[in-house]
Amino acid sequence: MSAPRVGDRLFLAAATGLGAAIVAYAILRGVERAFYTEPHPALLIWSDRSAFLWRAQESLYAGGLGAFGGYALAGFKTRVRWLGALIVAAVSALLLQALIAP
Amino acid sequence: MSPATLHLVARAHAVAAWIATAALAVAIPLWIRARRSRAALAISAVAAIAVTIAGGLGVLLEATYRARIRQRLFVQSPALGWLFERKEHLAFGAIVLAWCTLSTMVAARLTRDPQRARDLDAAARLAAIAAAGLALAASVMAAIVARRAHF
Image 1: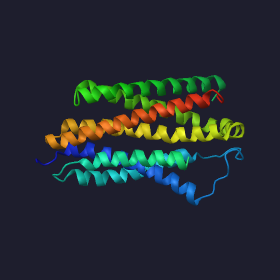
Image 2: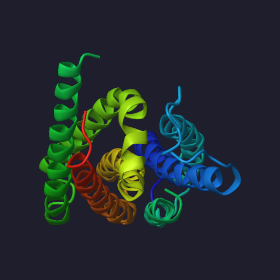
Image 3: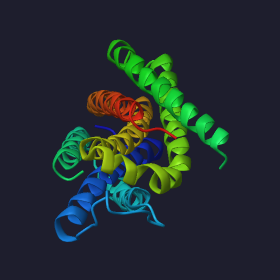
Image 4: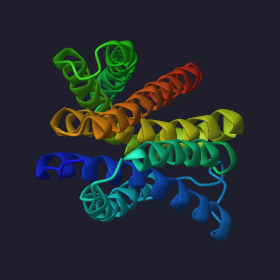
């Protein structure tokens, strides 16, 4: 197995970060619903900030941190099956969160 | 934003979302048949850009949705309100996965190791299928809600 090139590693890091962002999004929403009480949307006339946009922003930030891990992992001369596993985990976490903690 | 502009943005958001969903769906068979072809890469890039434009237009509508529609929707039908909340989560997932597909495809083209390229192909396929599925689900959910509540 040849040493991975920088370009290959960078794109792999980006893909890892994006996968990690979805996991972070699902966790953030799950924690919000489980530990913080929100007013029922039918009773809420207006809110000045969007929880959805805040969550998306925070999860992309977390994904950015995950990209550093992805870059490090991509440097090993091993197979990259973990990326497929990360994508499956991310989609499963998002679907589960959308079902039980919308 | 004036009501006319709002209508225009909402319509453009819906059209862009369906174009992105179609592009993501078209990319799957292309990617399975000709894994690292330029056509597969180009359609994936178009899909990622289209889904991001749709998301950007959705962000423009977010403040008005919160101010004018959200409460009314939940009062009319909590089930539809929660359906729209779910749609937002899935749409976020679709956008992120569309870019994840593109990154993985580019990484697969760049790598010199055939075994690594095979793993990246498999990951890109998974991401593409998931992005198309999430985008389709989000578009259908939005269409259901739009029949009852609109700008």
